[in-house]
View 1 (cartoon, rainbow over the protein chains, first blue to last red):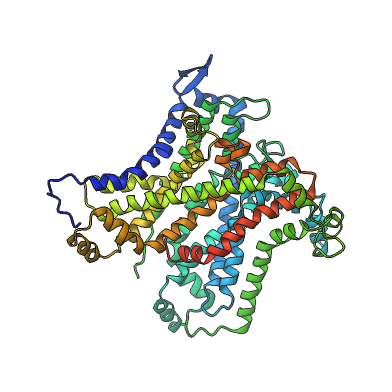
View 2 (view 1 turned 45 degrees about the vertical axis):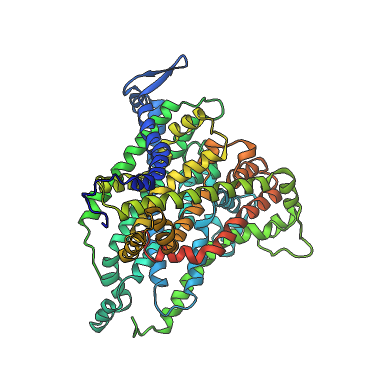
Amino acid sequence: MSNPENKPKFRWHIVVFLAPAVLVYTAVMIYPLFNTLRLSLFTEVDQERMFVGLQNFRTLFGQSVWSDQFWNALGNNLWFFVVHMLVQNPIGIALAAILSHPKLRFASFYRSAIFIPTILSFVIVGFAWKLILSPIWGIAPDMLDAIGLKSLYAPWLGKEAYALTALSLVSVWQFVGIPMMLIYAALLSIPDEILEAAEVEGITGLAAFWKIKLPLILPSIGIISILTFVANFNAFDLIYAAQGALAGPDYSTDILGTFMYRTFFGFQLQLGDPHMGSTIASAMFAIILVGVCIYLFGIQSRMRRYQF
Amino acid sequence: MATARSNRLNTYAAHGALILYTLIALFPVFVIVINSFKTRKAIFREPLAMPNADNFSLIGYETVLKQGDFFLYFQNSMIVTVGSLSLILVFGAMAAFALAEYRFKGNTLMGLYLALGIMIPIRIGTVAILEMMVQTGLVNTLWALILVYTAQGLPLAVFILSEFMRQVSDDLKNAGRIDGLSEYRIFFRLVLPLVRPAMATVAVFNMIPIWNDLWFPLILAPAEEVKTLTLGSQVFIGQFVTDWNAVLSALSLAILPVMALYVIFSRQLIRGITSGAVK
């Protein structure tokens, strides 16, 4: 702004300011990203890299050895996402709504305590819940017994039918703090005048939440939805920490991240295949891109934003 | 809301819900930590009892400290986290300043280019990153991790910091220019001190994901001497699955540093989120 556009001297300082960030970002993030997309078009024959076009994608979607695994991982990943959207985000919004009540005492204590699981690593979370839900230790069955529901207990993480849902809920437990904080911030930014005006009209309590606050925080709900989407379709650590690279029992907790890891890094007797790994990564890239585009062009641009 | 007739029942219900959820959030951590101080027998017989004189035992911690090189892992995690945070902050602030301060051809385009990485996870490019690190000999060094985390953190850092830098008054910078300060001095002397709160927010946002990451240490730096604490505890626990004392102690030791960081920085973190830095 301060430098007139027609100044003849080349402004080297702009280059100096931009260069380090742009170089590191381009070399370590953008270039590998496109290189991975490129590698998905190659394969290795006799230790030589060979261009094969879309052959890898035909293998991934056409050969049932691969496609079964892929659709299984994608389906599991969708369920993982659905559980987060249906459990994590509503609980987060509810907690934020309660916390944002202006006269609530100890609000900052609750807020800090509920955020603690979010700062723990997946390794801690995965193993801690594995121990707690384990039938050997017996904390979970004992606690259910105490409230008379022992019959409901099952070794959830070991049963194909429950393992994925159980791990999704563990992940929900871990990350509920993020939607809570973001929605809390959005609720705090609603001006008092609006709420007072509503109160004069007789709209208070729950009605005020549904009719006044919820419409005003819709943009933030959009943001937490897309953040959840990207994080879920890129997840890996929790499944790996709790169930290992094989995402047991019998691949029932396999998601795209673990599938890609197994494929390109190899496990047990299967050798790693960087080209098929890149192919899966490209599919993940496409899925995330579609999600982000739906959000940016379909949801965000249509949402009304209120300026206070 | 100033005159809300908050009746008592509502207040009790609110506290009830929050206490219940707080218990759910803290219970697993609590169970892990108390049992790490108990004998094997007590862990199984009374998992919910507090450690006392009868069942107190540090055997798990002894195993952990004898078998795993946790001090080395901790040191590696520290180097990686502090190193990447410093690079994110310095490089990010410089780029943010260039975008916020100067009008030049391609400014908007550059901003969009740098913002791409906010939504696209760097993990997608892992195959090519590993290949590159192998070719440059950086695999199994802490530099590999520092570079990857720097690249991963830069987009959001540039985005947040440039928002803040636009708010720094032009008069101040122009006064500096009249006094003959170079653009570099204006940035380091005048602008940087003013955006310190935003820098702290960026640092806190990046710190925990970097410290906790398992994916890149597992793939880029799995060697013993460069293991981070997260990977080190994952491997250790995997080996000692049946030694409950050791597993519980290792978990407690892994919880300790993040909790310390959280206690120190939680105010900053919460202020950062609630001030709308990520809107």
